[in-house]
Length: 115
Image 1 (cartoon, helix red, strand yellow):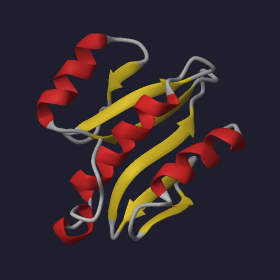
Image 2 (cartoon, one colour; image 1 turned 45 degrees about the horizontal axis):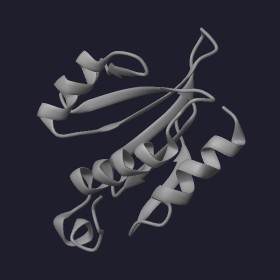
Image 3 (cartoon, rainbow, N blue to C red; image 1 turned 135 degrees about the horizontal axis):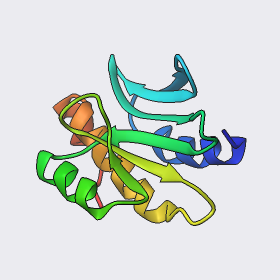
């Protein structure tokens, strides 16, 4: 995983209340409490991916949009996105902020201005 990308993601998530970066079984994840907000990792196909949480209707919409989005095989509210040189980092920041607000306790989520 390009370190620059991990730093860009951490700049968004690390600024949110009690959201912390930690090593995952593969790649890096960000958690609030015991809930995973996002997980970034490389695949055997040499592609880099990030998974995060979304509202159920968003999951279906992103799945139908196709590349760079995909539906993650775990959890009913998980969205995946392939990261590459064309990634829209502003859009990803909004999606990660929404993911945090879905995963965080209501008292923490209320402190965040959602896009």
